Length: 112
Image (cartoon, rainbow, N blue to C red):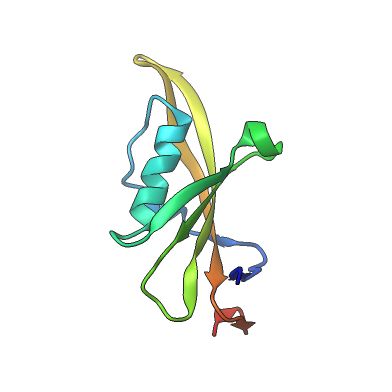
């Protein structure tokens, strides 16, 4: 059974949770660092879409396998900023938004 997606309007802004992630020489490396941190040492993540693939301004990563009976995981919408500095091209986090993935359903915006 596919998890139910909690449609938070808008998705919760969790950018501050990832403020410690440094700039990266590649956008995908930066997205990987965000997704890996989101697993909190348990679970896995997969890069679902990229801006080039989906025509959207963000990367979408699903974090799953969390040890929770209600929450199946999180869907992260990660927007990166490209800068050219002394070290060449660098990518930094612009925004990270989160939507919950639920096992059994949703009530009042929370997983059941």
